[in-house]
Length: 200
Image (cartoon, rainbow, N blue to C red; front, side):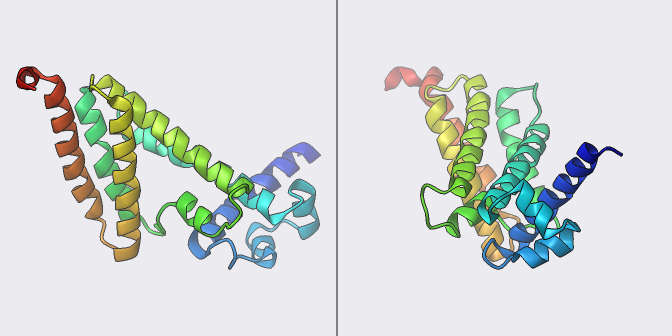
């Protein structure tokens, strides 16, 4: 095993441990000692890779963005009827809400703990929401709606709202309610563009 491979495996252990600790306990409550212990990476090595805690947390959140977006895109079929693809979001969300260790949206949580609007942590969180919105936009464009961009933004609000409700209430059926709201939303957008639009 070369030094580079060792560095890489230490780095991935470090990012994984940091991500899990901050997701379950919060950024402020997670000290460097806990990260050293959970990752098995020495403090000196951590600071060599990431000079500040903020840099480490940002890197862990970037990791989570990659993983979460890959899961989300896998959960919504790449082919098939456009409306069905949008609606597949909500059963996937419910599955996530019911999973062990669900603590809401890591990016909203992290932003709530970060006071500086210019911080790298907030920048990563904004980037995640932009990526999610861009993907929702792809899904809504395939539906042929009159204003796919606005519909994508409304879906993002439903997703984030359901995630917050599920986290606070512990009730995974928030995903089902969001799904029903999305169905109404898509139906009304479609009818504006559809055969009934002649009387508008």
